[in-house]
Length: 322
Image (cartoon, rainbow, N blue to C red):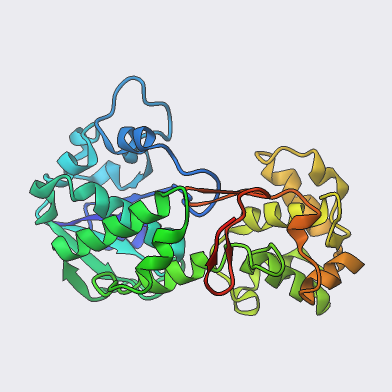
């Protein structure tokens, strides 16, 4: 029997090749904004009811329903649906958001032991985008993998980041792609000297080097060397750097101050039109001579931690409480 695929990004080749009966993609962005509530996540993975709107149930993001042998079971909760299959494979790549999705799902399955025995974890050591279809190494999911995932997910959901930093000094070898992802996530906490995280600082450094167009800041990953956020999340961070009371960046299109974040088309156009440079204050921040947070509002989420000027957890390289 063909397996069920649970993945950070559905690859049509799973279905076209006949490898899988169905591939389920998970759309949550756990690296940006407040985390969904436990009730929202439970509803998403639970049985489908008339109260579920479009995009609010796991089955809405499955690829291959038209040929699936289990099409009539799409209203089931995910754990129950998995029991229609001999094997359920988890394909989650190296991206930090994908590893958080994996931790969340394994934490969920820990409460459904009747499903765990069907799970196989594929160690996908490259991005799902552009993945050449094949079969990366697969491991059984045991209590060791479940416990590690639960520890990471619960620590990331906590109201402070202390638990996540503590996990780095422990044993995460059961899920070998988690440690680098968690390390990169922690680097997005504000630096002690500047009040900005790794991605914000790297954008300022690149602008200082003459990269004045947003395309380079948002998409040249090998140059940027950070891998947490997507295109528009980079844009929101850039908005904060350019449009605060004491901006670090000049040249960002003014209409971005008022454009809705849901208006992706016009925001994309405005970003492309922008020609960026650093202000004097921005150059001082890059030189670690100024603290951005002392002059500008901070209001963003890191997992369950709400970062504000009054509650600004910092990393230097140890964790510094507000």
